[in-house]
Image 1 (cartoon, one colour):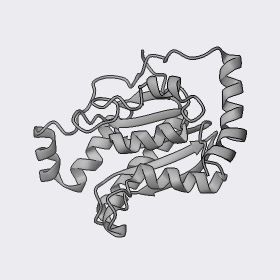
Image 2: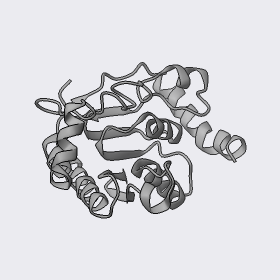
Image 3: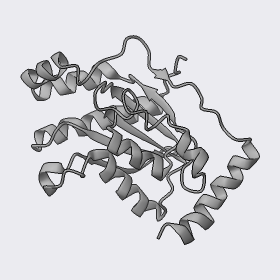
Image 4: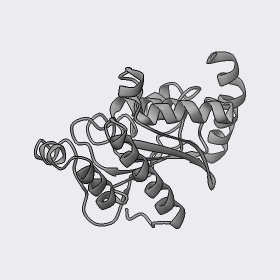
Length: 208
């Protein structure tokens, strides 16, 4: 399915790619993430693994944590996250548990990605078995502004970029961005009810 590119999407992904450049200049791997609700940036971050000496401080996870604090809720089900490269399985699980509605990324990650390889973002089993915690899979837009994302990687370290491309760790898609097929969802009325219960009952009493 072809994805219609919107001006806000381009603006936010450009912001994300700029963050990836900042991350590389700061001595981190060149990753950035931006979380948006409506037309407002809620949180954004570079990678913080080297700075914090903590391998869990991926840009996506740092940004999700900041967004939850800013919005005072663990549920980000009305938000979009922009990432310059496909999130890994670890980050994708955080995306699923925080219920982010839409995921937009550039470069594919065939060996580490939580879409290309591990299928965390597209898995429907966890939302069927634990609807109190997990919303249905998010909309996924892949290969968005991939040329810009790849150029930022190349500008950061041409040799490293050559090596990781030879190993197939990152790949660029061809043509326009592609949106994942819509997942099977419950009836709209039931999903609205579940969304209300997740935010106002299960999160409050079951996820302290």
